[in-house]
Length: 334
Image (cartoon, rainbow, N blue to C red):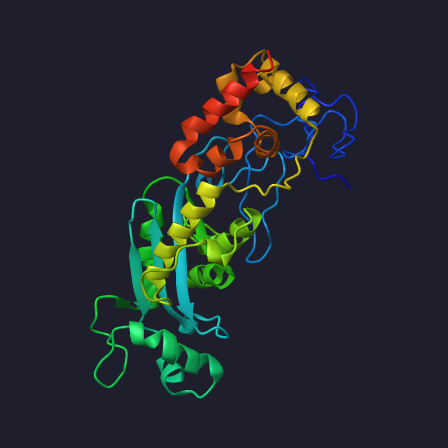
């Protein structure tokens, strides 16, 4: 059974079944299909309907606008780090949480509801490691107990409210972390791991800097050493931002990157994309097409055109330069 939504009979786009994504006649292609017959109103992501189910993508889906990533959107890059009891996924396992962004807007809090007794007294390996590396960086009393009078120590309900406010400011955010699987789980745990309860502006996925570094051909030795002690959530988050700068300066695509389509097909699609405007209307300028160019097509341009990958990697601070690069490349096709 095909679950794609048919378009009105007055707008048949595919004249036959697509050989790439297998969309049936008289429907749009999937958004990442190289054939390129894509619904111009299609939004890039939809919110998942349940806790663990990944986002479904289907033409016609409409969700809360802040959970939807539109082509050409600008993003606020944020960096997350947490300290935690590795085998306790409840909020009692969260010790501290740090966030920062490109503008150095910092947030740091220590969980007053953490399982302090286990961390301070248990002989198990996880607790011993935390006592040695994390607990000394927290505010404590003379007896070694967590100092709950310190302004950074807050109940989990306050953390939840303040993290929501942190992401409510500015444009839609992306969240980065280094080996961030646990970090993302801990942040979403503030809302019981229920995506339906997470405020709209809070990212529900983590972009892992370790993966980006690997894609760029970087090793840990290619990054500057952290100037501050490790395992303090805010200091680590700031260092993650520095790591991202190093990755972007190098470029995200490895030298062996493969484009999804041939260069000749890419040129043909770029020319055709300028001839057909939104909703079937004729014509787009190069600038207009650059702004709505699908991600898979930008990937191909980055692979074939020297310097474009580096511009795109820094797009959160130089989007205009990347778009100008796309326009300049399309000018060579005339």
